[in-house]
Image (tube, rainbow, N blue to C red; front, side, top):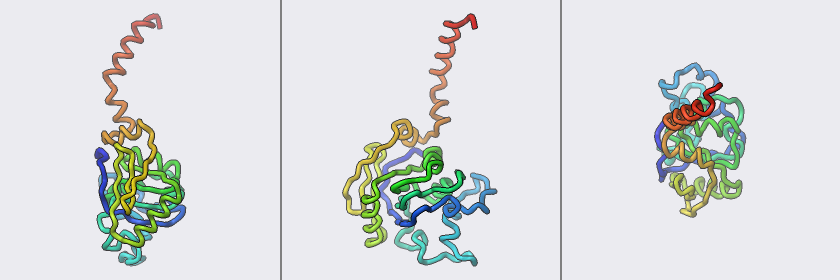
Length: 201
């Protein structure tokens, strides 16, 4: 996955509560391989009608939100099943950060394993941002992971908290496995020293 870099991008509002992983990526597409791409299937049944035509009212089909890389959602975003493909679809579409008052636990953890930054902000803060985006479609927002700061549509900064290890993994473009493999020499040195101390085992 790519290292997470500062964002200055169009933000799209999705003020829906309890958006589950089947809405993010319907189960009938789960047979696809990762390398085949998932972005065109993101929110498929919300974005397209039964004939496959785009629904003009859906936020990601509106021209003013073209190229959005930041998604503002409502509470309990990503609830439902544990499918990692929900994150793949968002990431492949181009979304790099999702802001919400709360997330489904498994979805939240899957984000960090795939280079997507899930940010939990207070509900009143998110409500104000969503209102601003709806009032001024196409507005941009900023996300600086290094400084742990989000700039709202009005430019006002908002600090956020994040686990230090997960922050470093995102900045380096690593998941937990890659981060562990990066410690291979230290692990080997520890094992040699430990074996020398307990050679009787």
